[in-house]
Image (tube, rainbow over all chains, first blue to last red; front, side, top):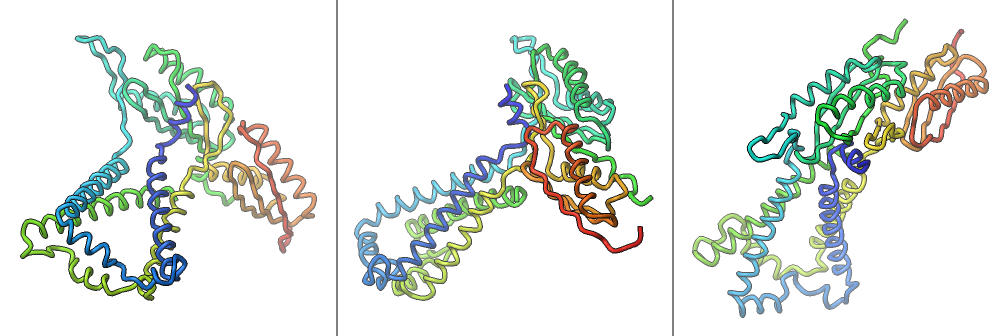
Length: 200
Length: 177
């Protein structure tokens, strides 16, 4: 449960980071290997050979059809991988509705904006909270809540927590008839102070 | 850095897809209609150049070093772009509470500046360390002690999951009190 609330803190960049790190490693390795090859580390004779080796060009002209199919397969693979990569990383994070009942014929779900708005209004009524932003993350069956609270200067974080859990989340739990809602709370401390001028 | 990652990642994906499309276009054109090949990429010129250029030529070595440097930068973007959230203790098991380093620095800064003995202060904070630089018109050593106590008091009020190390340096500022 706690793992789900931790996952709700922010959108995961794990896949983006993995792909970018891999791309960086591939480029770095290719560059370094070619530079070493040019220096003659893998043999001075090899360094003197042309980039498109006569052996390779003769193999290609001998097996023209196979070479074409290989090139087409490589092109399709690059296209598919690249498109999946781009679409996945450009897709906005989903805002799931909450499914209250899945019984066929009486399926009942609550719209995302309705929940987010209700919880936001609730959270903003807490003493010490100047502004709140609420959204749901995850999927319809296992939603989690992400809440950002801007606290005024001198707000007691523990008091705010007690209210968040005791009132705001308790009401949401009752509304959805669930034991617990995994929630990630992001707190911006002393955020309201910046509105008031510092000069006395 | 996270912004750069979110920008770079789809661009790299699109670049890979574009290379795939170009390969497909050229291969199929060369196969089906050899007369109109090359269509987009002048690959026959490239081929002619690459069959004469050797691995040890300066062009190839410069290009290789360039590619390696770009690869290193891309790798660094991927490695550095992680979140630097400051964890607070979880009030209940299913709730995770975090704050941003900037917000922690703001809170510490307000606390440090809240007394008249400090005339200026700058704070840099992360989950593990808080660095405070303050200027004062009083005796720097006593002010340093006072600032440290104030931050300690703030951290007892603020339920941080891990108490950061605090380093305070106070310098005397010229001026009349």
